[in-house]
Amino acid sequence: MDASPPKHWSGTPDEDDTKLLLNNNNNNGNNNNNNAYDPYHRRTDSEPFDPNSTPTYPSASASAYARPPRPPGPGHGINRHDPKRWSYDDSILLPSGVRIFSPAWFKYHWAVQSSRKRLGRLLYVASGFISLLVWLIVTVLFGNNLESHELSNSSFSVNGSGALPHPPDRIGTLFLVGQLNSFDPVTRNLNIDWTAVQVEKPLNEQDLLSTQIDIDRRTDTVPLAMFRDVLAVPDTNTNITDYQPFRVQNPFVKPVGYLGLSQFDQINTNIGLGQKSTNIWLQPEFGYPFDVYQGKITWVAANNQTITATGRPGVDVQAISGAILTDSLLNMRVRSQAFASCLYDNEPGCELVIQIWVTRTGLVKFCVFVVFVIHWFVTIALFLLTGESLLLNRHNILESTDIFAVCFSALFALPSVRSLLPGVPGYGCVLDMLGILPNMIIITLCTVFFAISRLRHRYRHAAAEAAAAKDE
Image (tube, rainbow, N blue to C red; front, side):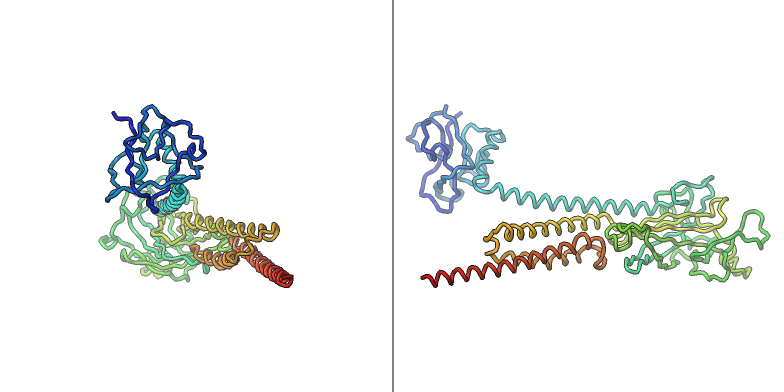
């Protein structure tokens, strides 16, 4: 196998050709090794070649450059499919005897790309791509987390802890399903449409609606008069002895609607939510994005046929075994726990109490954290520029007017970025006290100091020019 280096073509140098580094030994004038092979030397056919010579590689610190000649014709006269050719430049060939992907091969190309500033370009393009990829991965992960929370709302519980009553056969087949419609953080109202469903046993705790029965096809359907936020007490004015009947405590309360007549029956409710804790980080809106809203709704279902037949309002209370929530809200996470007191003998009433919590999603918290860090990064950078120019007399910063454009841009950009945050409340939350307000104050002061220093600098410069003109 021929160990000689690849032959280079000759021709007239072109100004558009890529710069190539010469050997450092040639630059320093100390090239005493006449047998050393220079990969950038264009050897002619008349020159002898020593196969025992040692290849030398370019250094990123070299300062001398030379342009190789461009070969005639298209394709630069080189086989573009040659595996020993550097793909970015047809005029550079690998030294002979260097294996591809060997340490010397990587060292050679690293030095070449560093000398041509392609390494820096590659690094910032790769960093931008990696940042975009990380953002997409984080978004997908938070989206999957939100989906898991939505699925958890579809699994029912009868006492808030997931444990079933003893014996489990006491669980009936009547449940409430709430569809989430909207939530207003300002008025703190959660809008939900409620529907009564019948399911078959055995119950699927993870997906209750998978065993749902079509109410319209049943003949034993009981129409339910739904009472909201009332209590059910034992009914003593009855002759029933097989079980303990219940009735609505206040008989003058009218039902808010009727369910069980059809599978399309719905009752729309607005549930007012309040704060869960007095902790400033959890208070509604003020603790954005860590604020927590909580509230509850109580349901009592009475047999409307018995009410009509007996003329006694709120009698013959039916046991509701539990409730689930479906659907999701934008930028909000909703959790619920239901407690069915009808399934326990030691409970004095027969109600379904549903506890609800509303928080911000993890993606919202992540976005707020990123914006908070970027705001402070910009603020600190402008503060350091101000200190360098005013305290350390960096006149090159004061002489340029670009710093004013940066300061004024930051004054308008920071509030604009804040307004783009998902579900952000009005000004005055903890995020403003720790972020946007001190950021704006510091940037405003930096802008004023820069303006004053710039004016003084101009005055002194003008005075110096006038004095020099007077002396002339």
